[in-house]
Image (cartoon, rainbow, N blue to C red; front, side, top):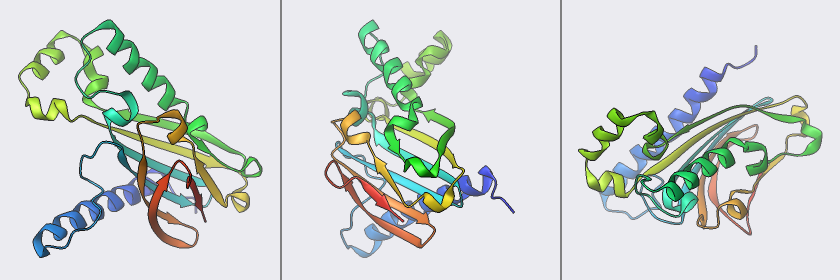
Length: 196
């Protein structure tokens, strides 16, 4: 039985919730651990689930890492940067490089951020004017990517090319569920391979 995108999305949600619960637990017992949910410039989180030939990836990053700013775009130049970022994120095949033999293709990309919602009309923009300014000044971007690989036996690694595309991203905190179980760690521009 093939897993459904719902199952894979649910697994990504479990990783995210477990991460948030772990961060919360850290505060209760006083130990300092790397937080996946903290808003820290240069740092993002990458959650990944591989189930057979289906690969689901969730990227959560401060907008500053990907865009160079976090405020709602007001100028035409800022709006153009946001549109260019959306196009770049939608080109998921250039951000995550799979082995050619695995024959992987992008099935779906879903982007979410208050910065992407400024095109939805004046009424929505007016709502943002009254929202919490601190939330606006620390906007995050969430991106969900779904790939399908027809030759799953050849799927033994993924190269994360986000660092060259977005130099403001210095490191990604990885949580993954793959063919050999769970793994976690830190990805950087020089250590950008996830091996299964």
